[in-house]
Image (cartoon, rainbow, N blue to C red; front, side, top):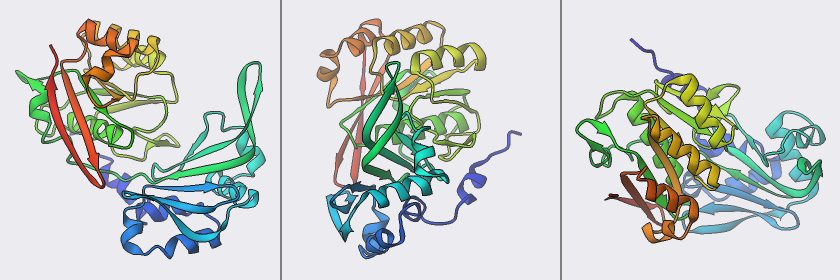
Length: 311
């Protein structure tokens, strides 16, 4: 019997998700955050630290100031040092991708002055703002949709479509977990090309967000290259990627489908007409890669989804 790491992942840190993410804040900023009260903190999605302005908290109803003092360079650097457990100067030389993943799957995004060498970003200096994103494991989203994503016992390649912040990656992650663990379907081998580290949130090699017992993750690799590596090396039945943006991503997805692998991917948009206006997705639709479209909508904290059949 295949063992599970679900309990291990959940027990790694018994603090609440917002407490885990906010642990990188200096004391005065953390105190101002706590003043929001337990009800709002349970709904916290992001913290925004912009130089010269008070920290804000992103809640389902929008951004609100936490009431603390304006954020300065010292506070920004302290957050980076806490997040990386090293000096800000040393850490910034290693953060070319623009974010740091924290234990628990949370992440700190960074903005500032980019320094390039040989046409590539090598470091950030003079930090201007940070975004601390709170990761919350959400399960049960995929279950109601799954029957409409299957046909004759086979999972059909699915594109998840929604505007920013509606929960595309959350649904993708739960769909991977459901298919991998075999909830409502036979268990599948699933491979994830996690280019931006948002699906599994690997931290020291371990997924911080549970994605199933039969799931293999390649983190930090471009989608096109990652899909090729996973299909050659891991023999998946299903492959998952987050948002497709480049022509080479679309071509890699088409090639994966040609190898008999079912696909799950996400896209920004409100409907099929949005996809038709973008060359990469127009190519995917013309190739018939995706058989189902899962459309998400969000109003405040409430989310809804519908499934459309693609010919």
